[in-house]
Image (tube, rainbow, N blue to C red):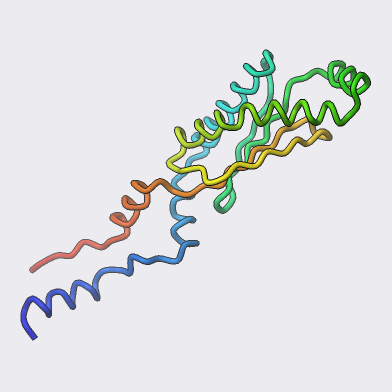
Length: 162
């Protein structure tokens, strides 16, 4: 066996497998997302909805589980306005109104998610919860390519030549 072949063989043994199970890779990139980043996403989504409703004071919370970011935004329609809308046009109209509003703002929300977090949005789901007066946005996430390659570099042990 040549010296070059022996060196290559040693390097292969010393370096970890690059094809890691997806679950461990996803946990790794998720662990690098901070609470501050999640709060920033929630704040930007809240601001966008406030502008759309021409209001201020909505509440928003962002949570990350597995590959999914959930942003729950409480809309700021007053109870009197909600009752008036429900009486005038029925519950279905109110639900449809909030769904239309959510569909208008979710592309902007997806932009903010991708701008703040080092991730790409793979899908978006929008749900209106009339009981809690909230709009729930779910974003499927995957790490950005540059982040994945940075992680592979971080996990690779240094090979010292003696």
